[in-house]
Length: 379
Image 1: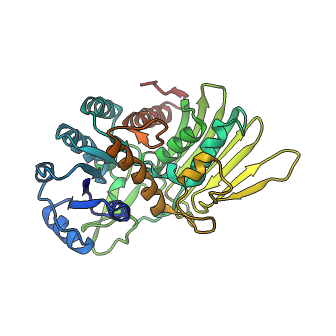
Image 2: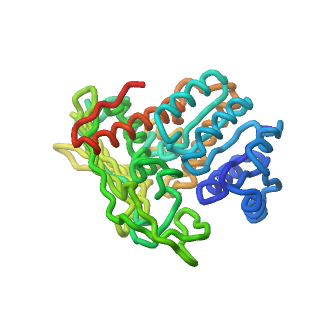
Image 3: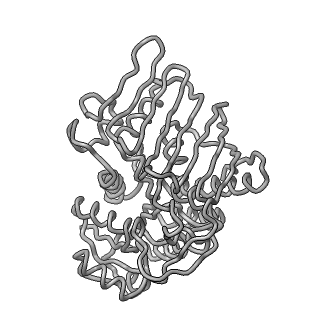
């Protein structure tokens, strides 16, 4: 039986644990930010072992797969050590802090012969797989325009805090690195085309925040004493896109938009038809037409194309949401681990995809700094 360990015991680490348990994967243990934190969270989550250190985890020969859900700055050293130890790895996004780091990670993954995946779970909402199948079949025609947003409100107040606010833990880009990479990856996955150039503007609307002196979980509430902290990471971004086929795009990111809890929206307009989707209404895909009525496709395997139906786990009318997308993602990755490598037609994100994210982010930062269009390197 394949056994997994999870690095990180906060919000997203807990989501990983839940999906793994649903799949029937045995949990060997967890690694927290400190030994005490790990032991406390392991007990609360019903996990039998808390590792004292990364070396302790990697020395456990029973661990086959390691899930990395730690803060962004830890991804590179942890993943490189995991691959060197001969274990498969599933890493949260963004893959690294810089493209130089992610390039090394791609090379290490390729040399290892192990499965190395980036956690772009949003690909695995069934209707996003449906949309990918529609584009591949030519249902939308040649892609012309890709638009949308990823908006949240969990950092909209001065007193809201998370490690992602600080460059040393989260990187130079925040709304772009944290959620913009999801939008960029998802729309590239659906259309089969990556942007080749960007024009970006970044905004920090809350330049000073109250940092708590104690720990705060993602989406948690700040309590206790605080200290003022200057913020330079982006609360929001506006990004224009160019594609190699002549298509254009535009999207915004925001972590300060009141009422938007977790709204990733995309709309793709082609030469024949259009489609749109919103993560807060994940079981409905809008399909736009000219000369006939628009329609809404409700997620139902009996009504979906082969790509979409293969990704659906529940009958129509039984909503598949955020946690289900992790289950579907891990199911695909663990099936490939059992096969001995990535299968033909696999749709999970590779380290190569994660490296492109870093090239995208660096181009965004450069464009914002110069006020000019910036090309995205191919590799």
